[in-house]
Amino acid sequence: MTAARARPEPHRRSAYDDRYLMAAVRLRRVSRWLAQDMREDLADLYTESCGTTTGEKYRSHRRTGFLHRLADDIRRPGFALVIAETDCLVGCAFGFPVRSDGRWWSGFDGTLPYDVEQLTASGRVFAVSKVLVRPHRAGQELACRLQEQLLTGHRASLGAALVDPADLPTLDSLRSAGWQDIGAVWRQTGPPLLWALILPFPQPTAVPQTGLPHSSRTR
Image (cartoon, rainbow, N blue to C red):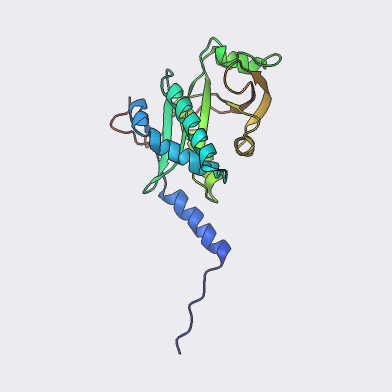
């Protein structure tokens, strides 16, 4: 009689999967031109990362909105995109430098913190538009790696994000990753109220020689 193989315990299997994903994942910076070509793949990643169980019409609406916002960001000076991939796309983070004239903070409710104002004026603030990761137990760790590489690539001292208060998953994820709430921003277009968060980020003293690989089309 052949002995049955013992089934791996669920928590051990999950821990192995986490280690496998983090060991297998590759981070890569790509150009705005390649980002244009990847729009549909990025939109697929967005809809999957949202994990919504709402109807197809609503998911299609959110996907269309994401594609519009992505197109706007790609046109911004200094746009940057970092992708995470194994045998497929598993995550991404993208954004752009905040202009030193401070217009990005227009509509801030109250007085902008002095250090944020000073860093903005010196061109050391980078706006993180989105950090997307396919649902996975190691998703938070991968999201932190993506945003770190995005900010490091621009030698930013401060990450900044404006988030719809109704987008609770994004707010929870950012706060779990160390982002700090600083107040509200009122806008005349899009969501009328956005929540402002910042991530103090130490500037590296040296750039490692073995940095992220670049696409051949990166500029």
